[in-house]
Length: 113
Length: 113
Image (tube, rainbow over all chains, first blue to last red; front, side, top):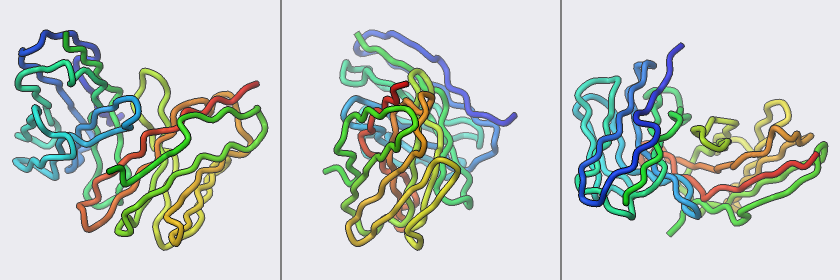
């Protein structure tokens, strides 16, 4: 079955370190997204991509970057981790032409100490 | 400035009764609305959606109502079951904004048996 997977599922890192969260989907979806979930804020968009070599900033992009070198992967990099980036991160994907329903991965729990 | 608001952080309902989850939005450009359900330690899963050209969409026990003049939508679950206990996120998108989803903060639903 096609799916979307995230790794690692849990990570503890130190302030100032670079961290990369991986996202891989096998649906061949053009659109991919990274959201973070925080209490009281719901899901907020960090970065998104509409296709290979395309990346765009979302609502809360400061301190994060993404790259899209192929259709399947959209890794999220925290350049210098901060305690404010302790959160649950969700990757998601959708087809270009199927309306706006997006499908989420199971999440990556990141703790910055 | 939250464009999608879920003003009830939590809701408790008796099994078999109706659950009504509410969502308000401020951006009149939104033309597609969705509800997602999220269990602990899992990613959000798509539940039901509605286009702005409709005022009601039904799928089994789940019905979404849209009141465009009031910029309000609601999710009705009838009858409620203990397995419905989860966090419910309302989301909205606009074609003009590239169909990116904007989420509310979520409502925790607890169905008591």
